[in-house]
Length: 83
Image (cartoon, rainbow, N blue to C red; front, side, top):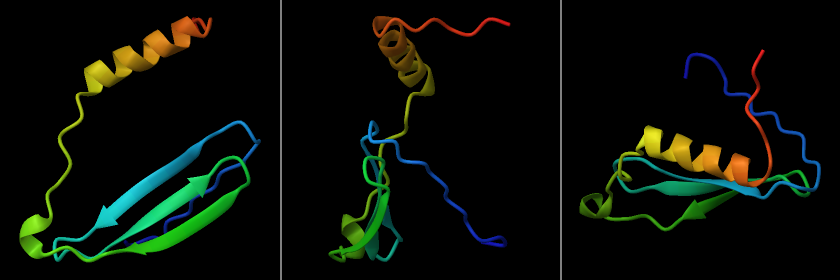
């Protein structure tokens, strides 16, 4: 990257973990975990996969994901912000 990546988060004890599994096309990888409960950042190596075993994840349907998120917010009693 041209600029360093800066990740900032403020754990408050209510959030679950955010986890990324990151691999390159040669099969090397690691798992990055941001723990929102205790404020821990963990990086762990993953077993190397053979080049033919590496596949990108399926595409995300953003419309479907946004609809599911909106339904969860409404179920929790939140209303959208309307200025």
